[in-house]
Every structure is written in C-alpha cells, then in structure tokens.
Length: 93
Figure 1 (tube, rainbow, N blue to C red):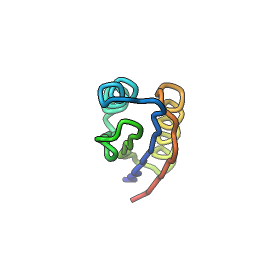
Figure 2: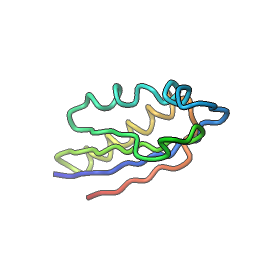
Figure 3: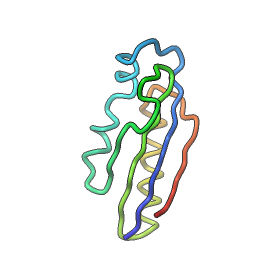
Figure 4: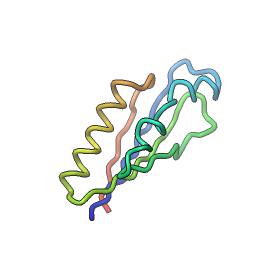
C-alpha cells in the first residue's frame, strides 16, 4: 500500500468574499472526493478571501499508481479551477 499527501496552495486574485471564494474553488470535493482512493479537504487559509490551500490523500497499490493519480489531480485542477496554483507539495508516506 502506498500513500501520497498532495497539498496545493492557490491565490485568488480579486476575490472579495468567502462566498466568492467558495464559488471559485467549488466542486473540488465533488470532483475528487467521490473517488474511493482519494480524500480531499480545504486544509488552510480558510478565512482568507485571496488564498486557499487544499490537501488530497491518495492511496494505491503501487507508487506508480499513486503518482499517476497525483498528476491527474494536478492537471485537472489547473484546467478547471478559477485560481492560480502557487505551490504544489507531494509527500509519500
């Protein structure tokens, strides 16, 4: 069993309220939380309007499978989220 912790930090330029932040970041839970091998949560900057941090825990039978899932998550987020990705951190447990 292999486990990765993937943490992404976002900048939300021009975001003026938590409601707008939720709309712009919305759907991360729905898009990735339904996958049995992925857990997702907003892990930082919860009260800031202009920033957000999300953490994904990915579990798989092989390191290759987990790395592939991480890449897929990163690529999909960069295409679909209305925010700038400031940093991406991967940690293998």
